[in-house]
Length: 378
Image (tube, rainbow, N blue to C red; front, side):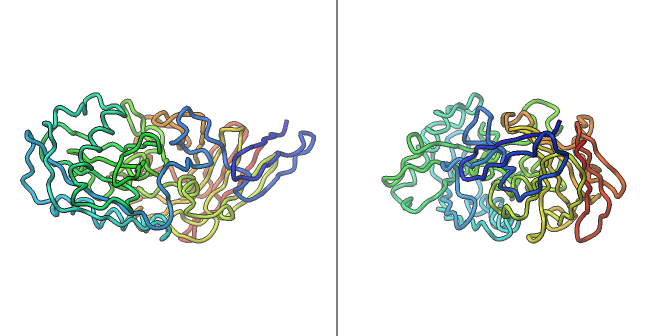
């Protein structure tokens, strides 16, 4: 029986699959394959449309940077030294992987502001939304007499990375009713750093900013962590060999258009040329929907730009499920192999194929310009 899918997604066209009596393929652009977000988190996920309260993903984003230390963790380095972990690597990365669509502008106040409590008093071992909001609001209040937040899009609070109990740096995702108050405005998106900043350096902020834009974590919250995507996204492994966001994430963030996505429904066989995710032009994504929340997706990855440490190039095949929550595997690289957390050999070689349910993906050509894949739904 042929698959029949109807998506009712705000801002997306409606697409009905082929008549069950027919075996013909229905091939359209990406507008018909925008799976809706059916997870319990409406503001973070891989389903369309992106929550309007999350940070804009294109244009210029002005980011206020505030530096704080504590009575039990007094800063010994200058704010400029600590800021060098973040900039210019962060804005360079985001501008490059967005094909120039996103321009992050940091606006730091190079001064250490002393928080009113020791670092151990902010609840980092049991951090809640309210505790996180309180911490950021205090930092903003300290800086406010010397900082104009009237045109700020995002706030980053950088804590002393050399001391204290703030071991990690999570993202704050508020709403207009419960964000951070500054200069008569409510700022919904903010990020805080911790002692892991010197480990992740210039890719720490792009990962956390991915959450600000609405992207979920692609690693598993329990150990072993890198069982879903391996190295193939910054949202999975910040220190991986291929930190570029994958093609679905880039499409979700509007870094390329619907015309660069091929949506295939129905039974039959076809072929498609994919260009590398790392380059701006050409066809980026093949999507074969399974039902209202699931699809098999294919992209091409090459050792280019920030992915230059890749040891194998070729098409990558994933399964996406927008019903699955952040940290539980909404995107899974095929074939699923939880014993290999890097998955650097996952790109298909010429002649190699992957079967998922009734869908077969096979690589037929692969070179510097990308890959040709054949697809079949039985």
